Length: 174
Image (cartoon, rainbow, N blue to C red):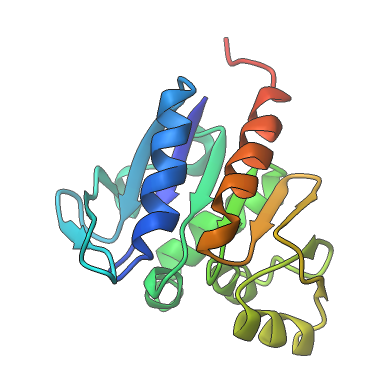
């Protein structure tokens, strides 16, 4: 499967690196999509760096089977850009798998793609989602149709397991 990973500055190091590597280890192709191709982004802990493979201008959602959104400050920074919001919205509208951890549902809020899904997020983001009318629960991982969400770095193992299980259910492209 081809997975787009939307990434901006100050992403949460472990929430990017661990799922990214697990997806690749499972045989999936992960493309880092951001605001500027070939830019180098640093995680908020300074332990992980990532290079943006393609800009939002260079890709279309229909080129990918799934979307991965790490947390940290990255989702908040990306949701200020229409092209990032439109990219996320397209995946949700198409019913493609979306894997969102920690602060990642901030992008779903801005894209207005949260109302019909049960989800979780970082505790402060849970409050924002509830105020917006989302169906929010406080669990380590929530799978609701195409959407997999988790709260925080300690939930990463459950997040990876659930995300890989969702990917297994998608028919291979021909």
